[in-house]
Amino acid sequence: MRQRSCGRKWKLGLPLIERRRIAVYYNVGWGGGRRWLYECVSRLRQYHDLDLFCIDRDSIGVQYPDVRELGHASKVVRFKDLPRLQHPAFKPLEFVLKLADLVRFDRASKRIAAEIDTGGYDLLLASVGGYTEAPLVLRHATTKSAYYCHEPMRILYEPQVPRPYGRGRIASVARRIWHAAYYGGLMRAWDREGTREAALVVANSRYTAGYAQRAYGVQCEVNYPGVDTDAFQPGGGHERFILTVGELIASKGFDDAIRAVGAIPPERRPRLVLVCNRIYAPERSYIESVATECGVDLDVRERIPDAEVKRLYQSAAALLYTPNREPFGLAALEAMASGTPVVAVREAGPAETVVDGETGFLCERDPQALAAALLRLLEDELLRARMGHAAREHVLKHYTWDRSVRELAEMLSAMEESTHTSTDRSRAGEPLDMSGVRARR
Image (cartoon, rainbow, N blue to C red; front, side, top):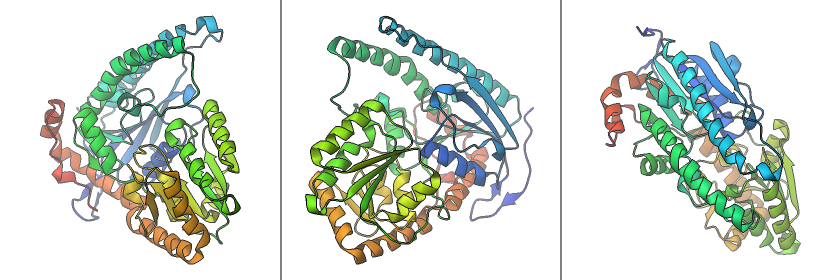
């Protein structure tokens, strides 16, 4: 029989936060998702007793920062992809090996789920899956579960950002056939099943919540992530360069950022510093060619120390943020917390966090419009200072980690009373009624 925890109750508004025993499952290596995990777990343990579970897939690389010490107990299962054959003649076998890895990972997820189910936990909190976006462990666990959805599995639902690099015609056709079978078939089904098995789905923005409802037929609660306002804070002054941040892949839209800086007249054009946690080599070659074409001084920096990242946020004249349909966008918050205004495309997550005309500028995805906004901040010191101050105050008011995790803790505590019937409705395809655990903002 599952044991109920009956620990301390926290009164931080209504409802009371009743302490639960929670199994936290994760599978994310580096970047915004990992920072969310660390900040969330480090604070959530104030309210609930946490044990951590992870299938450490070697192909996602180093997992940083380390969260294992944050739980009462931590279980990490190592998972190695099957070896790939490097000779071009064996390239078609890669599709078979990928499918085999997916099935093997699902079996490992089933074993982890069984261990969680026998652990007597009140709840399972899962975030980021490994192969699918929704963790495969959700398909198998019988423990009541909450899924924090950073984004639906975008490769299943969005057209890929066009790029000039790629394979030959025959290889491209073969890849499209494989994509339709692998992603559009088994992976799509498992990702959808995992999402719909969760009793509560929490999204990181209103944009993500709407996206998940269209993709999966589930209603989500919105819980905005926060930013560490002690680590990211204003520094000694701004320099004449523009900063942009993110993984160097096509969806991050760095070519649009380069073209925006390139639209500034040469005599007034600043340097563009690109900070990234991972680089896809063909994309780097492509954006460097765009920078050469546009006459932009591009400085690419990969996995630099945290202290240097924070210094760049503090000293940049502005953060230029042009990802394609970014579900949330932690970089915008980190810049604003550092007292640096943001110039962003008016879409998806950034449209919810950047206050146009107050904490920065929201523009259409147009080089001239973005360039005009950048020039205003570059050449008007008072405007830049006013917006930087407003940006910092906006984050302090709405996007602290303490506020974010407190709300999530309330949602998890309230699940025990509110999700028995709504889970059945969700799996039947009917909208959830989660008014009892609504995030309060």
